[in-house]
Length: 215
Image (tube, rainbow, N blue to C red):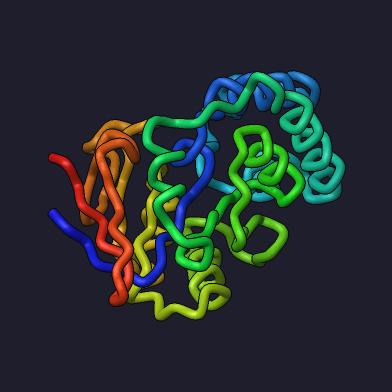
């Protein structure tokens, strides 16, 4: 299977890098500090959403700003040793011109840059929670990335591991590729489902980028 695109838009956590253990560790500590019971915590969708939205589901609005700052600090402090490249990430990104791809993450810019820098990824275009008013599953983050790259949304491909991110990509009118790095295949609705980025290769031509899947 081959997908043609003008730009590739990558989620970060669970797509380019593995941070699942770090996220679970930091949010569990945060929940204990703020008196959130395991039952309350289990009812909230955690992966693929901005921290401010998650915290707002759990605490009164007056406590949200300082609670978000606290979990951000916990996650930044956990970056050393808590972030690892997922298979295929380096090879795929190295094959792409800098103006053909972007990272679109629900993390804050401070946290996203810390995680990306830890594994040597330095995108020319980075869309973070700080840049948008509505996070995934709203299409705003991906539409903003397309505008920054100067590409029509219909000519973009979104790479995601979380249902919320895939929903955002579909709502933006983009082709979607799901990675089964954090969810089971039956949980992911996408145009293509692969195990991780190692299942894909990219060929840059004068017409754009051709993404081929090794099925």
